[in-house]
Length: 270
Image (cartoon, rainbow, N blue to C red; front, side, top):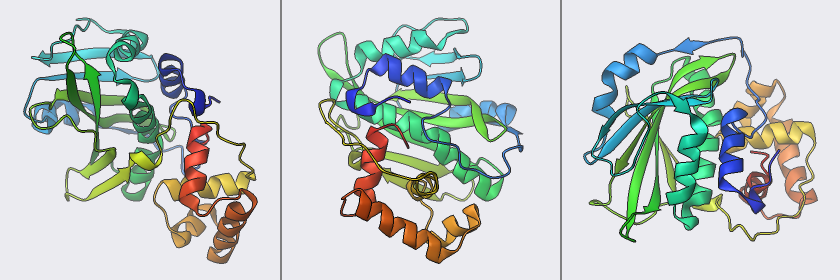
């Protein structure tokens, strides 16, 4: 487990990809697998925003990435399938220091939130998006939007992504601290306020006191489930869920579950 309060971008992003997210996997029916590679790759051009774009496939199991097409992004990428560490090191060199937490949180969250959405519908009709800023070669700031769509799910974990990065500096260079999940079919949108969960590298986060069951509940809360939905997922009563929630707040000396989730993310628990 890594500690996001003392983050190192290369080490932490490598860890996130190799472990398919930092959070403990709390999902039933994990034997179900899914593959939509052919469908998504045929439609991929329709997902891209206007602006210079590079799209690629990230193979989490093989720890590789393959650039499909670079349409005007002024960054160098290998033309053959390459080790994912190449992309991670390039991102480390250019990503604005203030947005490192945004990038790490967003990539980590993709792994469990997409799985949550998938197990609701047994289909993966969502694409995600978030923004991050870079320092360009002229000393100016560019803002990129990264979109991700799961291509393959095996045994309850995402093993392959379609990703695209688009330069949207002509639209905005202001970080909105928002991770969004957009349903391609019915246009449903889920927004997560990243600012609540990002951190300063100098933060000193105290230890968190959680039982295994309480951690399970906190993970489900961070995925957007209410008490009734959590009770059904974990096969316990709603009253038991609410009792655990109150106990978590009390013994960790926080005002609410948002504060507790923030501390848990900084400790790499979510």
